[in-house]
Length: 409
Image 1 (cartoon, rainbow, N blue to C red):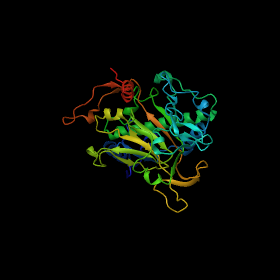
Image 2 (tube, rainbow, N blue to C red):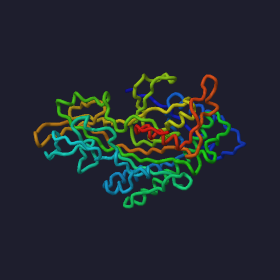
Image 3 (tube, rainbow, N blue to C red):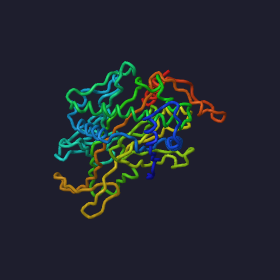
Image 4 (cartoon, rainbow, N blue to C red):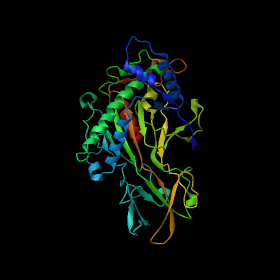
């Protein structure tokens, strides 16, 4: 794995442009320069971070705090509103702790009784997941909760639902964060329009393209504390740098782009060479955690819309183990190490742990009836149009079906 830096772009000129989007007003050179940086990032990496975005940090902190409190609740409260075939939001049980369990009679809890491995063992007295081998810390050991647009009539999506016994502030803070992300998406859309050299900076914000009928979604994610207990004979065999523990499997996003607020490191992207000239095929690159920034990544719909000029990049989340010295002052890179003694066999074990990680993803989706056809600025004799026209909603349905191994007409 390689540590590198994604482009970090100061978007203050775009924020200022949004404050006075007069149609007849000329575009300041500063905003044009930001657009050039965005175009380069979208074409080469598909990821970039933004600073000076104008988002109140209190809104972000309140949403993260509300998410943290929600995920600490009993599972019966959290799952009161779950994702179903007719409601594509809510609490995702299939990703949450305790689902897809496998029996392993050779593994024992600290009390000595047999137990069920649920993506690792869920500690009864904490939110941690423990296991004795990396293989038992199954991928996607996370839980999520999602909400959709506030206007079900225009978006044609189901009305929002919140668990009735969750704190009232939970709905308030998530709804507020959603509203602020809508505003940030509009700012970014102006930058994307300039980067694509479209005729109007407001092109994406036209009625029927991205207005009150959009189909955006907000998802809060919780990656619980992971604890890996190893005996002395095993500790040298585990290298989480070489064989990382996957917390969210490799994927691309379906929509226009995603605005991510991360609570810590662990995000990785994969560049397969191509026109970027960066990274070897299959090499995973660490995305640095920037506390005051948002990370933006393009989705599959935007790659199609730009006739593959811009890229939707494969990414994943891995466990990042805290660094700390053990009693001998030595630690394996990336692991926080403490020693415990198993009361059953009196053997010492080293416990490596990865801190709890939370994030909030805002998936920017167009209006369902928006027509997606490659932009004229992305089509020429050398690069003819690769795609037919398709409605945004139909494209999202197709991509979801493909990810599930299904086919659509």
